[in-house]
Image 1: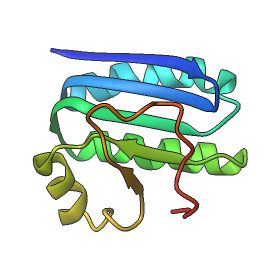
Image 2 (image 1 turned 30 degrees about the vertical axis):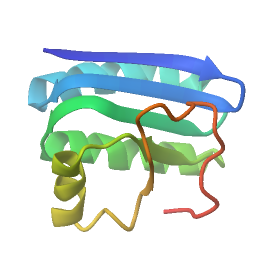
Image 3 (image 1 turned 30 degrees about the horizontal axis):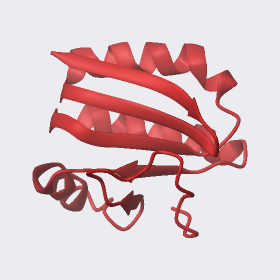
Image 4 (image 1 turned 180 degrees about the horizontal axis):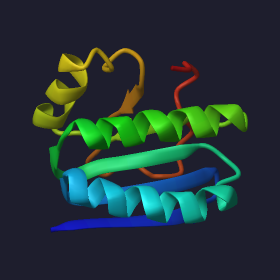
Length: 117
């Protein structure tokens, strides 16, 4: 089961993901983000704390989001990724491309790291 929620925060946007981001769920997420991305007029924090599984289609979706946000002068950052999810980014060579913030009870409205991917 997959879930997602996009909310506006004082300093940008937060996309919270939960469950398994497999091929079917990625199609759902892509459609939802395509419809809502024009509203995203700030940086995007993707909260991965509730994400249990991620495959290559999910990674592709994150790269697409990064490109779209960067084109409009905004950034994407990931928060709360488990060690298992971080390993997937590492195996893809994206653990140094994307910005990762600690999770747990971190505030979604915290500013993104100064580094760009």
